[in-house]
Image 1 (cartoon, rainbow, N blue to C red):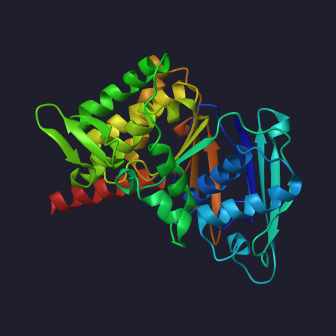
Image 2: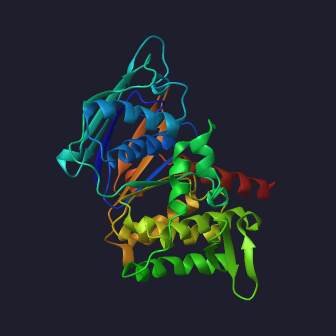
Length: 345
């Protein structure tokens, strides 16, 4: 489990210590506040630490390569907060086991290597999964060989996740857990996600209507299909960390409710979940699901990023009410005021 992350001079991310829950962690804020950069930086470091090679010299290149691949700067030094002169970025992860702690640093002029301040002594038993804002089901199976054999300007996290989508479906005791998670997703999609064994292409199989090619399925449903596939293969049930950037993208409120319950259910299964969102609807769904009933005991943590005079400030707490600034809530209230004023006119 990731307990804390400390950032210093990473792009627009506040120079603060982030304290996470072992269950659900939700980051909210306006565009360009650093939400996605937090998810990607942590994912990249944990992905490296889920490897097998623990020589310090290999870590120096591995961390840099993964950050470059996932965040796509021209050089590693471009991830340092932009200001005049030379500066230094530091990222520190504190895990539940001290032997898994890590810390790296790099300067503005760094090209493709980082300084390892503290190298982990143990690898992660369960690696992370990263889901971007767009669906990836239509990228199977051609994307991985394209990425591996040509220089293409795609984030490496896409390659990581597409490779997981191609895994075979699980058998055995975990099948029942997967079926329970899949039921609401398949109901919302109106069918099951299937893979053609010969071509590796994905389809939505609808009872009585046959198979529909995944590119012909609505994009919002394709996001559900991506999640369903990762559950049916057991990938999400066997991963320790899920990072999901704006899961609400291209979904209507009805489908956002389905996604919210899936997110909370995965966290309750023991997966540490990190999401970044702009959606007040999703935020409220998550809050209601974890306020009482089945998920009342699920540990949660909320983070708000806000503009504070030439820098970004961080607020964090175990409940949404602990946050003083929620721009998405403020904007909805302002819209309601404008709507009422328009009606009066």
